[in-house]
Image (cartoon, rainbow, N blue to C red; front, side, top):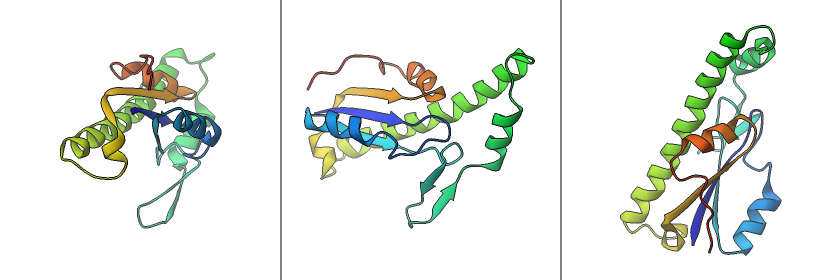
Length: 139
């Protein structure tokens, strides 16, 4: 089954788009929704603790204004894009390593030769930065 990795937009959450996740899964895709702890409204740690959005990120959102400071906005966007892209690459690498190692569960279902990335908002730009992420996947 093809793997689709979904990354929320700024101030989003991993459960923001449950309906499309379920729809994709019902059509034979394995769906992985990842959260960006610094950009998400909230994420949950492995121990179950809630982690809320970074105050630094919220401050940058409030100060950023592309109309009055294009260069400053570009720098901020590039910083955010780098964070999102690194997280997506990390998830893809984990999936590849676990699948190659013969991990059980969902890893047994995935066809890692068919990986796509879906994203929202700023994270949509990060999807374009991931090689092969804009390909059309057919189950």
